[in-house]
Length: 338
Image 1 (cartoon, rainbow, N blue to C red):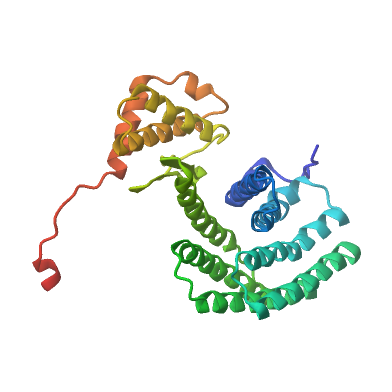
Image 2: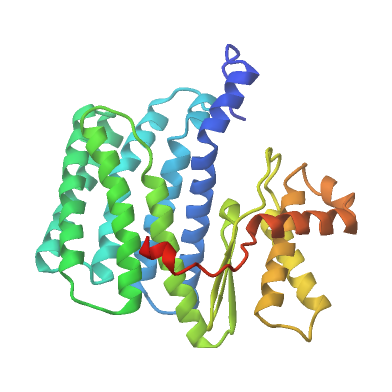
């Protein structure tokens, strides 16, 4: 059991949790994505370097967010092993990242050479950290090297003339991630703290998710629904894309089971309307799923759902529909001429 410092009050512990909450959630989300990518590579029954490197990249990224969370530092007694792990994991994350970019064809010959040199250098820094302990100079070297590598990656991706739609989408997500990562590393090189890079990784994952969903549609499924946690859900069909945010709540008590509640509401609505599986029905089903998920997180376990009534569900559905509804109104032509 973690040993909490008796001098830390409950309010201080709660503030630490709320400060780390988005990073703990993102760490769990990235780890889940890594497990799914690894499972996909395993089910294909052949070595898919792209999926393997991506799974390792996402896994290490998610674990870094957890290990470096202030809440974990508060709960775990001070130890050399933990401090070395918190510091050394920074040097491990970029290694599978550049192997993934190489496997994806984003690196040219010089970029590949740089990637392998980067891997050897960062691997050496990780080994030195685990063996001798953390050092500020190690992180300065890491920041400078990663900045140079990211700049080269951006230049090479922009010089790539591939006009494939999937490549363009992935490149846009990658550029957002690189911009956020550059900011964190540049600020870190000057001894300042910044932690916006994980949100850039969300954009990169969203781009990969869009491409994956589109390719899955080509394999046969007519409809793909992507659950996105606190960011809502997205519906992909051959004709349209529909995105729905999560229902806004002032307080979230327990997010456990929110995704299952969404899936239950979504499938339950479709089961009640089996003859009307058109685009509008699918969108209403997503809304009902989001509404049920919003009730689920208001209390622990199934306490809130057990007391739920049809009137409450319909009332919140109407509220959600009003929040996300926009009336169609033609724009007067002279608006653009004035």
